[in-house]
Amino acid sequence: MERISEATYRESDLSLDDFPGRYNRTKTPPIQFDSELDLDLPHSLAAAISAPSRASHRSSVYRINWRTYARTMCAGTVATSIVIFGVFSIFWGALWKMPAHPLAGWVIDSDGGPVGEAVTAALLGASVPAIKWVARPDLVGQDVGALVHAEKTWVAVFHPTFNLFLLVNSNASAAMLQPDNDAATAITVYAVEARSENAFRLLIRPTTQALLESISAEIATQNVQRLSTETLSSLATAAPQVITRPVWYNIVNLAPFDVPVAVAITFVGLIFTTILAFFIVMIGVSARTLSNIEKRISTPRLLVLRLGSIFLAYFFLSLFLSLLSLAFQVNFNRTFGRAGFLVFWMLNYTGMLAVGLILEALVPLLTSRFLPFFLIFWVIANVAVCTQPIDVFPHFFRYGYAMPYYNISGAARTILFGTKNNLPLHFGILIAWVALSIVLLVACQLIQRRRS
Image (cartoon, rainbow, N blue to C red; front, side):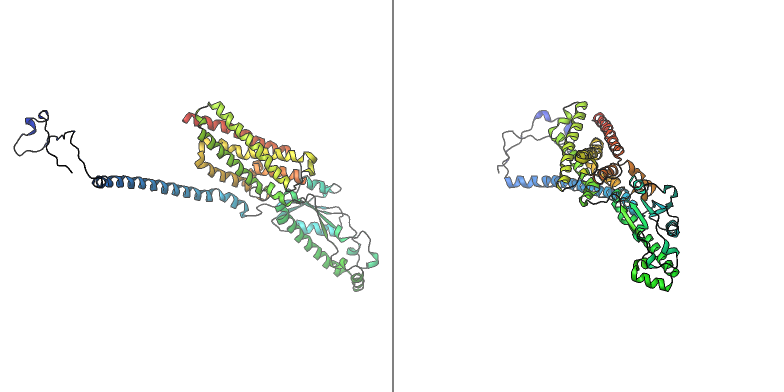
């Protein structure tokens, strides 16, 4: 290292005011080095001088980064916790008291005899939470099965004219049995499984079977008490079922849920449809961000771009989703013949627009950071009303009649199983959601443009 030889002081930089006294050194004259002098410091020494400042700056940046990371993670965890109690509770609340209200059931006695009276009295007096039985004598002579299929009620117990000779005549014998005295025809139960397979399997069938078996056992006991010992002996040999089960029932399933893969169409697949729709929304956001096209075109063109992209993408996705069901041999010809697949495709297309277009509409307001939280709410609010009939839920869940999932599921059941045809209503509600989402999309885009 070379030694600094001298320092050059400029006279113009010094004045008498700078030295008011001998010992007053409050101001120090500036020292200027010759530009030609070169301080050739070793590289290690220079690095040692600059290292603390760089390390301090780096640690400061790291602290800011870690604070941002921790703050974001904590905020996200808190928001997710709020979702658990605020959104998931909708689904838990739907299943909390099941059933909160009973399903409607009819009792129709066209015989007027002791069996009919016993069945009617037992069903009307039964204290069961699943079904509320109502006597309908005004429906005698009508097609009860057609009324149940038309969704006038959930279940109907019909007692036709029945040969009750053995039940009222204590002197009856096996020789007096009539050919039409079939215990299985004494009571007929009508229900539609495809309307709601969960309600049929968990509520309607178990409740009805338990009640009718109890009624049959009680009638058998009373019948044995009326018959003489000789008659019992002869009946036990010739027709033992008359003693043990004089009255029985037959369940007529007007529309069975006989396509297992249909669960993926009427329930679980609806969640998949929403996830696919959400993917397309996020892909569109990424495409507009990477291309920077959103800032280069006018608002009307941007609206046309967003809507056109969604409509076109969902058109093909709904087709592929329908073809997937067709590949697993789902029969679409049961209700509409060969046009069934086309109707099902249009249902998937309209349904995907109904559940996905609202996500596209809220992107400018919620952004990609908060849109997943709305997605969770949207899925839970729809799924909660599809597990069981809305009739058994608390009144709060009556909103489900207007939700996309409920109407997609109802329309799919008509196409696949031939349940009551409410397609105009179901498609109308789905189209209303599409129209509402378009209006919301335009409004949100205008608000976002004004802010920017």
